[in-house]
Length: 435
Image 1 (cartoon, helix red, strand yellow):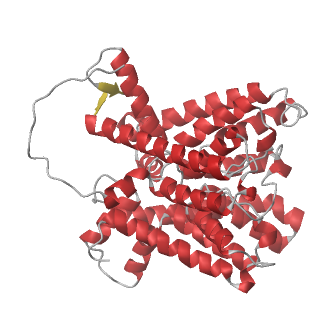
Image 2 (cartoon, helix red, strand yellow):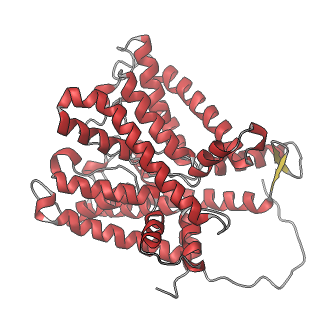
């Protein structure tokens, strides 16, 4: 283990956690009627990568113990194993050395090791407080409806699942029963937006008094989040307005609630209040784009990340305008960041394309269903058109790998297994023809 580099260690820790979760879910008292190895592995991976795709119904297939195992995996995968490791290290009085800090830096996607321990501690405290407060609000709805014990459990389960962008629900229809319930819609969406915007953004907003003093990353994330959520609300509302299986039969306020929730959830939350399989193909295609983009860096969300997409978009606009530099908010985005964004986008596209290719060979489903499920798995979203429950063993194994790569990122795997080569030799430049 000492010879492992940080990316390799992160992958190893995730693999060990998934295997441990699989073993626990295979125990007789974890399920109501037993479960196969591949289904246990798929469920453990989906929980650890905070995806939310399910091959068996969480509420009926698993006992309370099995559901708690899933909940622990969600919390570990969402907030990060290394965040909990920091707390344990501090509790036992063990010194956190440079190697541990490098590992925390890798798992939290930070650019430097300075302040990573403090960030990890704040992250854990902040997460537990937000989940606790949200659970109280949800309990006001579900305790009167289900009783004290079941109502509190439902509130805690969905609070943790939502904040970590996992999308797991103890009900087979997710949150469809609450499509026009303002409290449920608001609390759940605020949870996964807060979890998906990125913890560095939240802490930057907390400590910075003036908007112009915010970091460039925070400004881009806030602007991008408001813009993409607003556009998505408009798109889903218009595209589904006359669909009798989704919005058509709801009141105007109900239409707005449902459109809003379904517009913000594809960026890796995974909950749904509408039947995904009954939505218009144009809406599904738009959701595929949202799932691929995902949330923010240093968040519980997946996808290529909003800042990655915006960096590529800004670079494209700069090229069209014949600008040498990529500039936003009077700041120049470095070439290294643009190259990293391009590498991440290309690597992610390759992973999704390979997943689609394999599922086309193994699954009896339409192309749109396969693309939707593949992007949902890579973006760790968890939305499904219904294909996941009918996957073959090979299909399930393929999505297990896709979810893991999607959660940790293609670049983590590339850096884990690539052999660094010194770049001392310089060669003459020469252009090639493109376009």
